[in-house]
Image (cartoon, rainbow, N blue to C red):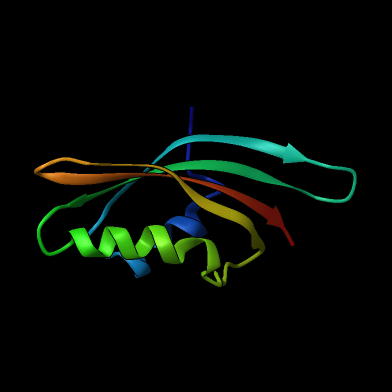
Length: 101
């Protein structure tokens, strides 16, 4: 499946927040309600520990309140749904709902 097509803007914005992180889209599906349409996206973010470990904690805290500016889309909801930290890395699973403008 061609993940990431609808989520390119969000990936770019996340790279701006965490340029040292590795990002990959692990799931993407269309989403519709009576008044809105968009896409639900799951993104894996991997950060090396050490100097970036504090940044992982900051991202977990700040991400839900961050104001994203995306071309043609609005971030209706975004959250870190899982965070696993080992001796070598932190891996965050991010779930987002992007609505079409």
